[in-house]
Length: 175
View (tube, helix red, strand yellow):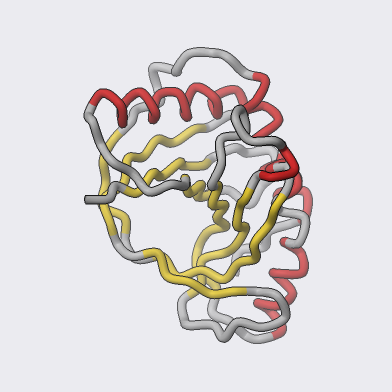
């Protein structure tokens, strides 16, 4: 089981502060693509407030997973429903969670859900400075291709090392 430390989560929470302040253009290394996403099972909690604080209960979530012997998946996830440039900070809705390998009975304020397999517009970023350009590039791609996407973005965090930024933004395509 990969260990996600509080510092990792804190580092991930800083994403949206940079997101709101960075106005760079897309890095040539970042490429938008459409890819198949397998079904994702996740245990999570809902959060309302600044995205920078959305992982504030992550330690309790990890304790819940450990104490209930829940088979852990590979990555942490964040699901973000609102544009932080258009919605007041205290009204931003998100979910913070972890991939799991089995169905989990909701309890102790933690929930379980499946995100169905789908095609998604995806882009990977490897530094905090690339977050805003990544969202700009994915938005431009969706607009240019006239795609309809789910009303949320999923961020998959591939590194548990707080000094390494390695994440992917997924925008599920809907028919």
